Image 1 (tube, rainbow, N blue to C red):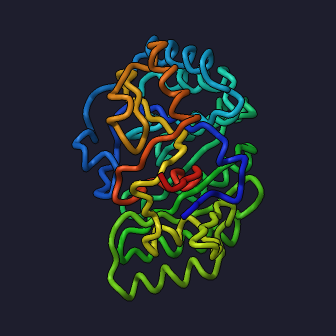
Image 2: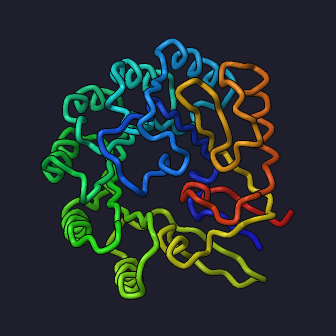
Image 3: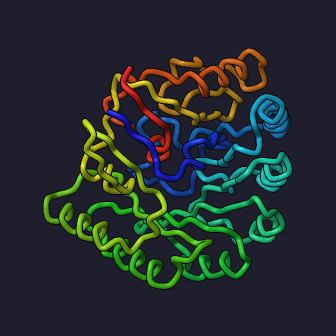
Length: 302
């Protein structure tokens, strides 16, 4: 069995996400931080740790191939978010993504618009959104900032279907992509509705993957992979290039915290180990691949 993404440029990219705060003004029950009990913890990255970590990354990795995501919680709650944005954008990453629910984003649009490598990944949470989401999307597009909108689909939310329909009809352009994220299990009727929505292919379909089973080639979007339960790669060697850093500066492979054992990003030995992982891969230990970016990376039989 072999799996890879059609877009080789993405497959060769290095993904780094830095969780700059665990605090959030939303409390979504499908948040990835809920399971770990970290959501809401008062622990923000300091500017000095962030700055040192960026320098180590820039000195040890092919920075032009790196996508850097500023994550939370809700990162715009960080008291020094403007410093973090400026520092990351100036480092030389191919992309700098601010992942946000958008509730506090408006005052940072001007800063992001001043950097050609800045992007916004905006999430719509139907039961939490307390501002004019459509107006914010319009402001970002008018500022000419590349935008990815992820519509969250908790069960039985007509708001999600309505917003998804509005966005795909108005904003699926080269610089604005719309996707759907399915964080929970569904009853059969809603499973069928989402299946139809995916097959209608109204969303921007630039995240397609090729699966090869015994010379039988099939192509799927990442939404289909999740919905159909195809994200099973346990025992395969994954050439993973996705790393996550916590507010203290400890870095791990996103899908396996045992590989780097939460070493600090500022250590030269850590960066050396990261390069080994990028070029040699690791054996998948997970029952399912939990992140759609993980589908990017080549996976081969051990």
